[in-house]
Image (tube, rainbow, N blue to C red; front, side, top):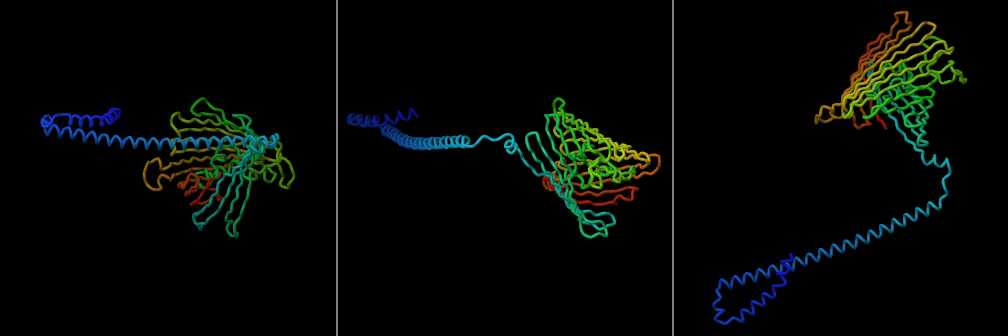
Amino acid sequence: MKTILQTGRWLPGLLAAAGILGLALPTGARGEVSDADFNALKEMVQKLGEQMQNLQQTNLLEKQQHDQDMQQLQQLQQKLAETQQIATNAEQKTIEAAQAQPLPRQPIDEATVNRSFMLVGDAEFQYVKQSGQNGTFLQADFAPIFLYRAEDNILFEAGFDTTLQNNSPNSSGYTTTFNLSFAQLDYVMNDYVTLAAGELLLPLGTYSQRNAGWLNKFPDDPLMVDALLPETGVGAELLGAVPLGDYGKYINYSVYGVNGPSSSDGTQNPGALDLGGNVGTTSSGQNANLHTDPSGGGRLGIFLPIPYKPHYDFELGVSGQSGQWDTLGDYLWTAGVLDAALHLGPNIEVKGEFVETQYGSDQGLTRQQGWYVQTGYKLAGLNLEVPFINNTELVGRYDTVLNAYDQGSSTFYNSRRTSVGFIYYFTSALLFEGDYEFYESNDPGQFSNQLILQLSLGF
């Protein structure tokens, strides 16, 4: 650029010198200049003229670009000044507003500021076709859970279950039920201990706390859940978890005391065992404990993720509960549960529980056993680019219940069920579930084979 500019400044001088030289030469000398030399000089002069014209155009463009840059810089400086002024005004207004407001009162206003409320839960709509009977849209269920946070370490949760269901044969219409599933107040004492009180979801295994409702991969519960174990109990509980080194390993625990099972008719008849009947009130409405002492129980579990392999983990837990169940306090009801869960990547899950209970009575010792194992495989693990495949999971379950009434006799009731089905995930919270269940039982009260279809929504 420097050379071109210098050449542009020298060009008029060169042209003038050439003209003077031409005038100063004698006529003879001018005649001695050849046409080739003259044309070469002429071509050089033309090229110098073109370079000067191009240089003038370049200088003009550079000047225009410089003027535009300066204009944009001035605009940015003006906007920056306006933004700084707005920020200064906002800060001044905030200071004035804070000075004008009175100091908050303690502790009422603090609790009001910190509290929060959330609604979660699930809803299910079910179609059932039992062998030898007409198919029907059997029920609609709505189960909201209310979560309330009073302070950072004070929580309250309550779940309700509202069900619309067909009445039994030879009865008209539908029946609507509304039940309090659980309600508990939680006080977080520190990072490792939480105190809970109320109607608690009991940690007998993990099903009632982690797999009920739309989280269950089947439209109905395992046989042992309703037949052998209480899902809730009124009392208090200490629970928490303690980490074990690195990689997310930890031990989780719970220790609780609740009213426990009771007798529905005030006798020691084994058939009167009521797993959820003792809430501290008699059938006549009087406040009284239905037996002399509460039940105690707990669970201890260990969670072991596999290092450096996401979604690979194993959990094992043991839990139990024992306490009086009859009104006289003469006999105990005792339960022990072993639970396990295995995840092999994001697509394979295997879990199960084994339960054994026993309780005494005037007629002897009643023992009951039950267990289930279920597995699921998400077809996304096949890595197939086929419509609907990646959103489908195949599931299977086997469960059984063995009742031995009066250990000294040969009276046994044994029920076994094999279920195969699928889940289609419209979204992670909207599921279409279906399974077919094969029953084998010598208990006349059990169902026959059946098909269940269910649409579930978690929220």
